[in-house]
Image (cartoon, rainbow, N blue to C red; front, side, top):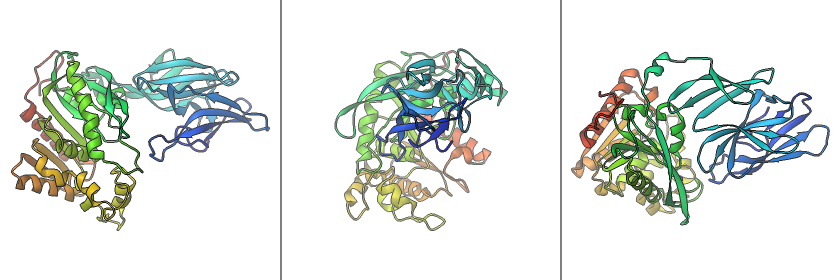
Length: 445
C-alpha cells in the first residue's frame, strides 16, 4: 500500500485472494483549495493488463478510506468486494459501504453519527477491528463482524469514563451566505446537558473554528475538545454547546474572512435560538488558535455575545507577518498569504485587507467581555499582549491569563496549568452567563 485513498488519488491496495489487482482512487477533488484532494471514485486495475473496473461512488457520499486486512491488502470477506468508509453529504453521518467489484453496486453495512478509525481486518477477512466512539460511547477498540450487524468492545481504555453522564446531540441545517455570494447550507450541532431537551432554551457556549465544520465533533465522545479542553466541562455544568460550521473560501484565494465568518455564524446561532435550544440573551463564544482569531474577529463585528474566550489566538495579521520562529523560519508569511488567513498577497500589496481583517485594529469595536488565554512559549503570545493592552487602554472588559513555559495547546500543558485554565474558563462563563437551571442529570460544580 502506498498512500491513502482518502487523500491521494494514486493510492493502490492489493486485492485478495490472487493479489493480482490494485484499488486506485480516481477523479480527485480539492473543492476547498486546501491542497488535500480526495477521490470521487475507485478503480480496480488487474495487474495482467486487463481492462480496469470503475466503481462510481454516488455524489451523496464522500470517500474517507478503504477497509484493509493489512496495510497493503483490501479486506474482502467474500473475495469479490471492496468496503469503503464514507461520509453522507446531506447529514454528515459516517457509513461503511460494500461495493461489489463486478457490478459496482453498493450495500450499506453500517451508518451512524459516530467515528470509526484505524480499521483493520483480521487475516481470515471475517471480522474487523476499529477504534469506535460516539457522543455517549468512550473511544475503545471494537470488533465488528463481516456484515457490521453488531459490534463487541474488546478494550477499556479508562473505566472512569463509564460513569460520566453525557447528554444528547442534535444536528440541524441553516442557510448561510457563501463566500462567493451564493447561498449555502451549514450544518450545526447542539450538545445538550444530561436531562436537557430542545425547548429548554439554555445558556450556551458557541464553539467554532474558521474554515472548519465543528458539527463533526458531535460524533466524538462528549463532543470532543474544541478549546483543547473537554467540551464536557460545559455540558456537565448545564450549558448547551453550539458547534458551528464556518466554511470560508479556499485558502489560496484572497478573502475577507472576518466578515465571512460573522455572516456565516450568526444565522446558525439565531436558528439554534429559534428552535429552542439556546437562550439568545445568554450566549458566549470561544475558540482556540485560528478559532481564537475567529473569536476576536466575531466580537469586533457583533455585540450578540455576553462573553468570549480566545485561546492561543492571532489578532494582528499585519504585525504578525514578519515574526520569525525560534529556528529563524518565517511561518507567518505562508500562513498569511496562502494559508488560513486568506490574505492572498503580502501586506505591501494590500495593507487594508490585513488591517480590516485584524481584531487588533478593530479593538475600539469590541465591547464583549473577553478572556484571553495564552502560554508564553506560543509563537503568537505577543498578539495576546497587544490585544489585551489595546482593550485595557480603551477601558473595555478584558482579562489576560498567561501561563509561563506553556505552548499552543492546553492538553499539552502541565496538569496544574491545564486544570487552572479550564477552571478559569468555566468561572468566566458563570460570571457572564449565570448559573444554568439544574436539570436532571446535570452535575452542579
